[in-house]
Image 1 (spheres, rainbow, N blue to C red):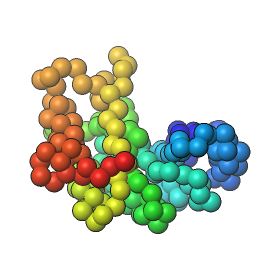
Image 2: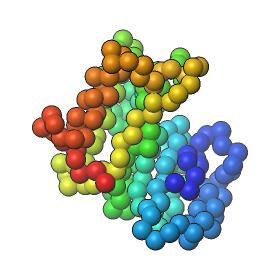
Image 3: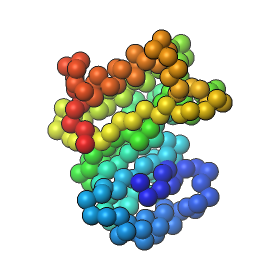
Length: 190
């Protein structure tokens, strides 16, 4: 990953997609052969920024998204049934694996999904499983789907604190789907 989330709405590092792509194509030749470069989009980036920042001239091995429950909830309230669609389709267009560089229930404590929010944390997890199962069943390659278990006393919304934590069965649901132990596996990840 040459730069994590270059397209965040509050980014001052890359004022435009052209600035990021200039950076990307300057540094890409220094990555050793055999090491894939991953484009990771910010979850708060607008769909047009998800696409415009993508280095479309090649040399990207995978497309990932940092996707949190609060972004899923915002899409849910806008009646957007597939908030991962933009990057899912971009990956397909370029024949690349699609995955999640980070996923979690919220970007902050006050916006995190729980078992009682609307939508629920469970609905969020089922959406993730559905998206990646659908890709796998269509013969597409999935990338990694990585849970963000951030360690911060101020940001505990994604932290799994014990075996009894309510997040454990939801985390296990995604892991089981990835491994295929529930019969719906998306074990076509790379």
